[in-house]
Amino acid sequence: MPHQTDYCILGAGIAGLSLADALSAHDLNCVVVEKNTPGSGASGTTGGLVNPATGRRAKKTWKAEQCYDAIAANLEKVQAYSDTNFYQNNGLLRPALLEKMARKMKEQHENTTWPEGWCQWKCKDEIQEIHPGIKCVDGGLWLPIGLTVDIGSYIKAYGRYLKDNGLSIICGEQPYPILEDDYWLLELEEITIKADHLVFATGHTIATSPFWDWIPLELIKGQVAKFKKESGHLSFSHSISSLGYIARLDEEGTFIQGSTYEHDFNHLNPDEEGESYLRKRMRRTLPQLEEQSTLVDQWAGVRTSTPNYKPILGVHPAYSNLHLFSGLGSKGLLFGKFLAEHYADHLINGTPLYPEVDINRFT
Image 1 (tube, rainbow, N blue to C red):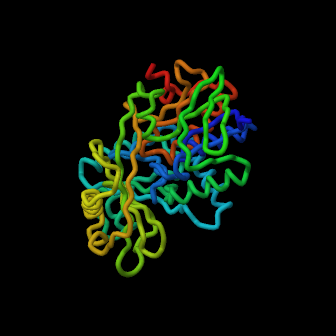
Image 2 (image 1 turned 180 degrees about the vertical axis):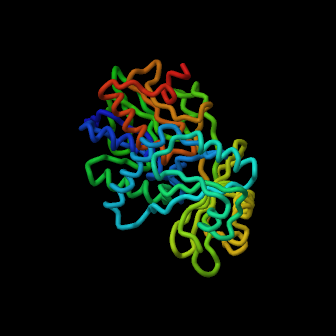
Image 3 (image 1 turned 60 degrees about the vertical axis):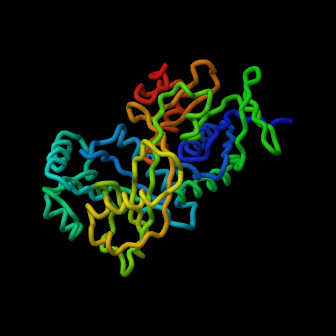
């Protein structure tokens, strides 16, 4: 007999696991099917930031307060279950590297309402007091609430947490879903899944699906590199966002430099050009650190983005039980948990989707 479930979710990255968690919290049965392992796609990057001030102007992100609260609470929940520390509340420094950048960042900060204590403008001397020797022109921002996350480790721990709490996660399978009457059938190696609803949360491979080839997705390859300072510990405890980002992973001198934004690419592997690009960005911010750092590892993944840089949530226009959760881009860690809860609320209680993320903006 087929294994019957309310929702079958394809993809065990940030989107898929977060949605399965949110739906399960409403006592709905879910099965997650992943072609590799949890976090094996773009969600599994070795390090990233929870940063609500993004872009060259450090603009406050969409729904920043709700998104931050959701991911911070989830990190704490999963961390309590894991023996390995995968995130730090160590703050984020955003120095301006050009006069024009400093002026626009300061204007943006002055015209933005931030929660108390979230984001502070610092003059050049104050920035260099926080981080002696860092390149800075006319000031920058200090965000005490910035979080640094080993995202791959977080996703793996999240998967273990959900499985131990009753969620079925099936890995190493890539079935082709078949619509039969009003349900979906997915033939796996050992079982057949019969699902009332099917959700695609498969990242960049959505662009190759005939169900979703009408969605204007943009695919962006991103590379990050793990470096280690050759001698001694890092002289700073925070992470940095300027040209790319530097995510401080531990006290032993290991950190992540990210990320490239490759719109035209012909392979999915990390390469020497990526390392060179990342080193150049590091050199612009911390030249002495770049000289003293050795490459430990390098990672590449493909993110999905949309014309308005917002994710996509919603039901397929032709199939009332076929859903999409994609387009998280580089803000997947910040957006994922909040939007999963938002979509679960929409499905269960009929709460309208935010128009900025509603799939109907493309229909």
